[in-house]
Length: 209
Image (tube, rainbow, N blue to C red; front, side, top):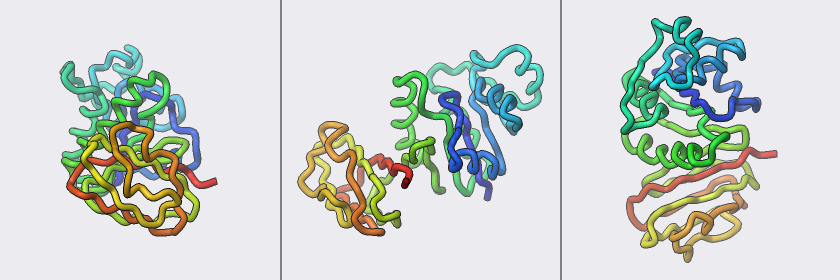
């Protein structure tokens, strides 16, 4: 069971948390242009995936044996990398570089986490320099540092989430807009979110300071 890191071509990791994940990875899958940035950082990918539109000819030649090229325009490079990662017996998958640069790419990549989490039986998250996104589909209990900021994003106005361990209860929140349950805070070291029905919910856990 491998620790797989998918490195997308957004902001390159710079925090201790993200760089540790990068260095501790058993397998690194780069979304085309991210391979060049990884090489300039001093590390090498195991696979390079995508349509190769942002990878220079120099690096296409350098990584010729590692390229998994796909011109499929129905999926983005991150999804192509995830599809490959699923075939590698992952024990956990961490996605880095999925945010930053263009905001439309950031929103698209984060929303895809719901699809990925639903289709795999191992932990998967998007880790940024500021925290991490994770997805849940049912009632969940999280062990968290006291005082950590937690934002909850759901896309179902019929969903009710009963919370325990949060500073601001979510029991009466109507999830018809993304801001509705953002910027909450853990007032205990265990937070339980009880969902009224099975539904995809994105959580962002900010780094503790």
